[in-house]
Each structure stands twice: as C-alpha cells, then as structure tokens.
Length: 333
Figure 1 (cartoon, rainbow, N blue to C red):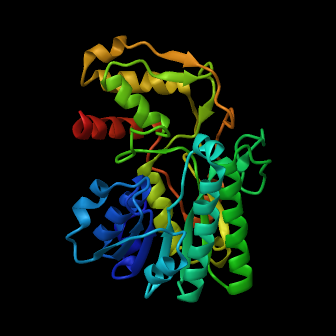
Figure 2 (cartoon, rainbow, N blue to C red):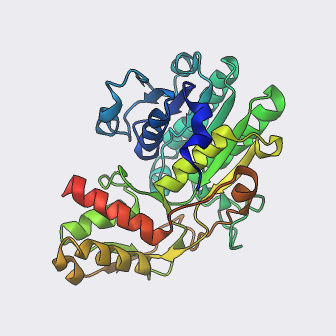
C-alpha cells in the first residue's frame, strides 16, 4: 500500500487539473488538497459539474478557472506558475465521437495540443495525462500490453492515440516530461449517471434503484477491466512523483488486471443494491444489439506500472462496486 507520506513532496506544489470538476478530476482535486497541494482547476463544465467541486470552493488552496482548453490563452493563463499538470479534460465516449467526430477532435486533439504548448511555455515540470484503453483498438491480444496496439475503432480512440504521439514528440523535441495513463473503464463516486453518454456502472445503478430494467448491449459476454477510482488516483500520484528516469515519457495501463463481463457486473450490482432495497433482486435485465465501435474484451497487464511506478491497486471489482453502490445510494437516492 502507498502511504500518504510517500506523496508529501506534493505538499505546497502548484498543480493544475484540467477537467477538475469532472468525475476523475474532482477526485484528484480532493486527494491533492488533502495532501496540501495548491490546486488550480480548469473546467468549462461541458461534462463536469460545479457540485463536484463545491466542497473545495472556499478552500484557500483551491482556485477555479472557468474556461475551455480549446482557447490557447486560457491554457497559458492556467499554466502560469504551475509545477505539475494533470490533464483530465476531454470529451469521452465512443458513441459521442461517432455522432460528432469534429467536436471530439477539437477538444481531445487541439485542446490537448494547446495544453502541451502552454505547459512547455511555462516550464511545467511534468505533464500527466488521461490516455485511454480504446487505443488498443482491434488488437485481440489479452492481456493488453502497452507496446502492442491495434487499429482504432472510433474517432475517440484516434484522438486518444494522437495524444500519446504528441506527448512523445513534446518529450523528445522540447524536453517536457510526460506520462500517459491508459484508463480502463474507471468507476466510482461522482461518476455521472445521467445523460446520453453515461458510463455503464452509474447508469445501471440508477436504473436498478428506480426498478427499471438495464439493457446490456449484446449477449453480455463482452468483458472489461473495471477500475475503481481510488486505483486511478493512486496511479496519478505515482506518475507525478516517479523519480526513475526510465519511468518518464511512457504510457501505462491504469487498471486492475482482472476482467468482468456485463452479465457478472449486473449480478454484482443487484446483489449489493439489494442490501438497501430487496425489491431490486427482482428487476429483470434486458439485452439489446451490440454497440458500434465497442471492443469485445478488455484486460490490462499492469506489470509495467508495478515495476516502474510502484503501482499497487487496492480495489478489485467487487470491493470497488460495494464502495460505489454505497456512495450512489447515500447521494442519489
């Protein structure tokens, strides 16, 4: 287990978190404020929520900049006097990118490039960014190993792969330290259950809580390496503090190294939610067509992160789901 003292060096550092009002970003804000860092949150609230950062607004170590990463001047202003950047801002979702590839590209590629330029111009020490498991594309190899990828299956996947290419060039051409974290199906507290592109776990939780039947895309055998938010927070802190030279200017799977199919996932959710409402046991699960752009299976090797960053994931799927279900029940019921 990584102790709090391990990250004490981040105390009093100036850290910019883009997308800081989002699901992952707000959890990073919370943890780094606990450690004692000075946080600047940049968000345009297109997918993030003010309620996620309400607990921090009056904290003297927290500054909110309401702005868009598609504007270079905003990025330059946000990076002023910053030691480290955690770049979480992006338009997620494969279906959204298929419906509107132009906006996904503007935010995820042009916005990302703006942030890299601003980080370079302001002498930021390290730029840690949210990459994605979607980069593995049509590669059928399991588990997924960082240096073996396939062809992208969606505009979203293309944008996240381009991020990795740009980060690599900024490391080589300008000496900017970068680390990419390929997130695998992150879930947990503050993940938004609403909207057309809600992630599967919060969406299913809300439907079960309302006694509505969730719809699984396909027969339910598609599997994912579902990763609890606290594992992701740990990875970001390790990436910020990594001191081995060979650990920097790399990408890492950010996952558990275990997979769960969608039928198993709904069984877990019914079991844990039934502890709060026994009627949920009787809610039927339905099946619909497979979704375009979806990869059948996703399972990460986390050996590289363990070896070079000291990663030690604390939450398997069952433990994380128990925590997440409790949070949703307490906050959304």
